[in-house]
Image (tube, rainbow, N blue to C red; front, side, top):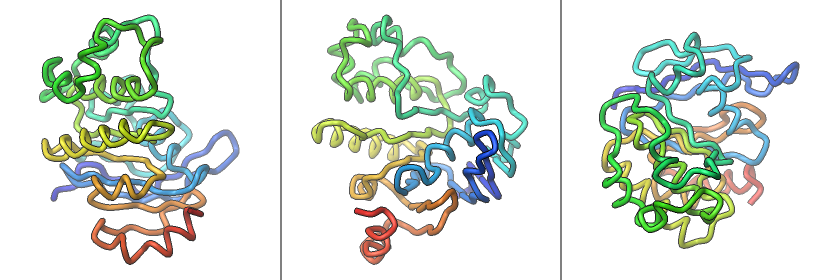
Length: 233
């Protein structure tokens, strides 16, 4: 499949602290990849650097051939990158529909409210509820749905299952499968590689700010010993 997101020699810093050390990744159009690794190895930093939230960076980031390193943060989404952070960023005083409608449309192919409510029935039931009254799982669904409405080309998801009940994790897995069937390109940061194995095409394993391994989902059974060692699980 053609490359949609290309990352080469990506370095990043928090102040004087050098946190990413030459990260290389390629994500094909319609592909779902998962970045694995323990806490603190650079997974979230990689997403924040790709989107431009972390500006002290060097390297190459291309989206559909466009150089994204010079794109200002407020224009990143307009070029097709959508980011769902681990903290979700739900507006507490706005209800579900108001949260959904807040971001602008940035491209063709964004989901309508009817499509979103079909994908997330819980949100339809809670459509008039303010963000403060949503459960953690409902907030995660809303954070994902809000980006899907905008029409971005690539969805960056940071730990979408963290701290959620198993039934909600299962539902998010079903949503990701549906997005994959629709041809959505997804970069998923996830510690639960058993969950990720149900949806991912390929894995990138990070350690100490570097990619230490890359492999397709079909090789996962043969990599279990290495994953247990690196992930400490």
